[in-house]
Image 1 (cartoon, rainbow, N blue to C red):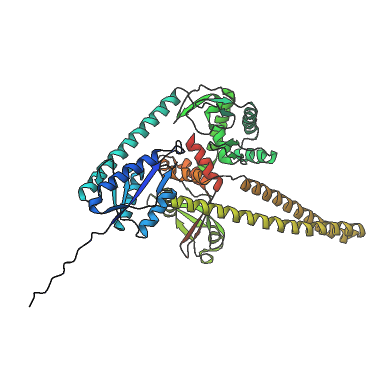
Image 2: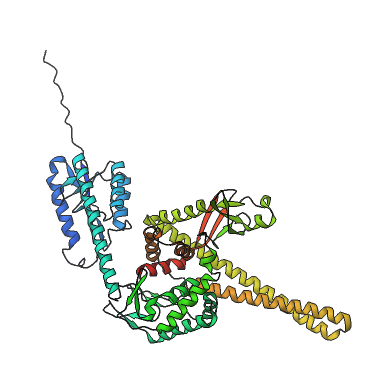
Length: 524
């Protein structure tokens, strides 16, 4: 009997699906027949071909980001790559050099963790490492640490150069202030004669009125606006209505007196001054005197950062700062206005510790600034809030028009009645007529205020990039700011903070235009 024949099973190694990711920071040269992206892909394909014995196969889908910076993960091809990784279509990602994936160490490590969780390895062709092995993963971390250190050194050198340029009185870039324009070749500012007259008029107006808020009201009444400018991408930004912060920044900026500021020091500038030195110094003395005589900086000696911003959403009342001392220790808190007037039983919020709610708001802004997705979500939320404010103002304007029509009709009726009555009856009609006329004046004043608010909202033109720049800079600058500056920055970014002590819910209503102002200050 013939022995039974054994069958041998042949084990086929599964294919390793390798995706090639390529990136170039600028779009320059991408129209050439063979560009940087093609060169990166060619090197990656050669590497994959060398791993044919391991059954590596290049996937047909191209993941090319041309003209996208590595400082952000907001790139279309990268997003598609991550989606395909999540869908299980990729086993390995190949790049020419690791910084093609990201230049941010934090983003890079987060991406690697994402790949690891989905069982996908990462290979850099030029550095010759593969994260599928422990040695390759260690090598990558070492390279990333040195790259991060190099970027920090470069950033510090850049800051040193800018400080040195400021000491020599040179313009170091950014959006020029009102009264100046940047020369076409850059690196220098020149006087804008029309705007220079506006700047001098603002200084004279402050000397006359002695109040930044009164200056704001008068300038907006005249239809005056802040500086209009055109971005590098050709977008025109219309100047916004004046705010108290914008006026204070203009009045205290020594650049208009021909000086350049570096910290608390000033140096003679290469540019021409607009405001005479004596007038500039006079305004600084007036600002200091107003501050000492009960100004905002003096009144806020206990550093309430959310002063004027915090509202109780449970009863729609403002929350005012308050404090007490016990055994020599200062306790700060915010109190609901209604609870203070009518008793704590009328409102579930009552009071909230100042440190707790201020730290929460600040940390929330820092958290948003740490991620592009959160930045975009905040930008979209701020746009939605802006639209809601506009709808509210339009509805109020309609209501005011209806009320004005009715009250003006009452005035006409009472005027007619006054002509037909005498004695005691006429006096009663006259009293009612005065009340109606006063009501007309109140409604007309409010209608004018609503129109000013509408104009201010309509002027808030800002794009996502400016919001992202302001949010990203918030964390680095926050801890080095003095308390008055911290309060001012929050006033720039936030319109209101709604807090409900019963449900412990907190909502930040953003001031969209403030992101542009903060981005401008960062640029300067």
